[in-house]
Image (tube, rainbow, N blue to C red; front, side):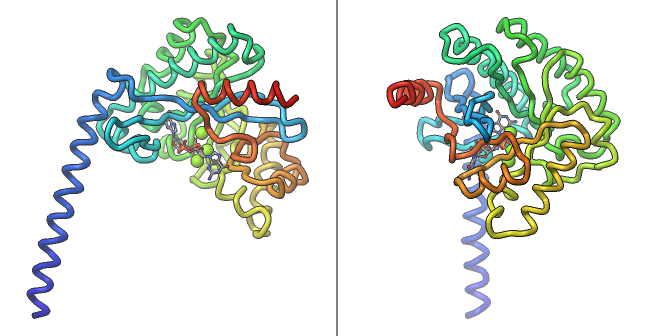
Length: 283
Ligand code: C2E
Ligand code: MG
Ligand code: MG
Ligand code: MG
């Protein structure tokens, strides 16, 4: 009896695995057309000054509007895209679209010229030898100054060959763009190497912000990152600020910049415009 159940379980498991694989193959095939069918969209989350609430810039975050499955968050398709190489095309689209949007906002007066746009880079893009050329191309095509662009790189994208990472980052920096180290504290940055990499800012990962109120350890880590920023002359941006208590803790620890649901969820360009109008009305 037990043996039979085992066999059944194997069958069920096998069927489930096949279904999963099929779903995945289908998703990959769909993703191949996502750009051409204009199913990718960017949402934008403001980065603000914690003292004044002033918006310093926006982070562009990609979403896939799947015709059947609805909105798919990046964590559910970026890893696929990484594996099959589609991330290169998606990354280029994201870069162009984010710059295009920023320039449209500038032209319409929605943002002042000091407002910046940040785009996330994946590991595979980071290892693309043509990356710096592509970034320079995107800037000139969208007629955007390099000073308005920040690329966010995670520690894991740089894993392994730090000399290579330094070359890539130096090449990007030479264009005049800014570089932020994303999700700082969750990866394996070599602290001894950090000062040789041309970053302008460290982003405190959401996992530390989340527990600031309850966890003495999270506060200690946030404090250390802020100290590190100070000694290496890097800005520090806290991500995932959801409530006032977290904001207060961060300000008390000396953090000046942040982003999170307390200020705004990532919003489509259309939703941002409406939110902006509401602000004007209520002011
Ligand atoms: P990330 O760059 O660290 O982005 C922050 C993530 O935290 C975003 O999730 C954002 O929506 C979410 N978030 C922001 N504030 C809060 C908050 O207060 N509370 C909570 N719970 N969450 C908050 P999202 O948009 O799902 O993106 C997840 C990750 O996907 C990003 O992490 C980034 O690594 C990656 N990603 C997003 N867009 C792109 C892209 O265009 N290219 C690449 N390569 N990766 C992307
Ligand atoms: Mg990011
Ligand atoms: Mg992050
Ligand atoms: Mg993150």
